[in-house]
Length: 313
Image (cartoon, rainbow, N blue to C red; front, side, top):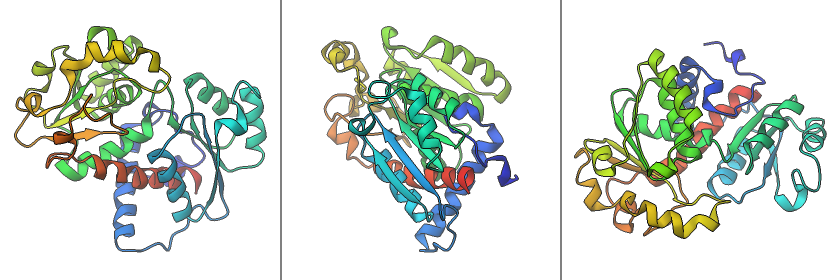
């Protein structure tokens, strides 16, 4: 594939990219990781590039992985937190976008409202990357796909089960499955199902890719035979007022040894972190032999290096 196809593009959601392009991103990530393990750092595709991280939400993995990625690729990076910008409050979103557009070579946005991300992308000519919004978390799932390839040797033909809240990570997994032709079962309480529009659009794409995307409210049925068990926090940032209500509805979806007895003997457990240990996942599972959560966190770095190298070189 011609690398020039990626240059200058936004990365707002996985659906911005074709199946072939996502595979190329993952191939590039694997090669960059291999080079990193060999301590080969000769290529600096971001030399003389300056990248801004504009974050409304706190972050460990997203911030550190992007800052390290930019620096390892030869670029410069700086962080703007909510106190510096006040996106949409201290300044209009489009004003922030247009000013930064004149001064930096790329923007990585972590925001509460997906509409803010779209508006920034509309008014900025430089590439904009979604570091998380309330609707999607594509960089997380890109790293997850890399992890799945490493652990299972392939993506197709593996039963993936997402348990818990139909949140932004779940949405990006649904889209990934629909593009790449994966087998995904989503299990949530009825009241916390994924977005109907995202689900319906994914079903249409899935018919072309051969994906099997299924909803099953019963977690015991959903996890039966699963080779990949994925969960996330039950209460995302911005929904703290719903915490106790959500816990009451989601108790049956906790990833614990009892529930995992229904999974395939060769299962792995994934979690995008941060985790609320004792809520959506137990310590026994999080720290157990089937957990790949730390490898998954590391792979955010390699996947995002590939993304940055391709769209900003």
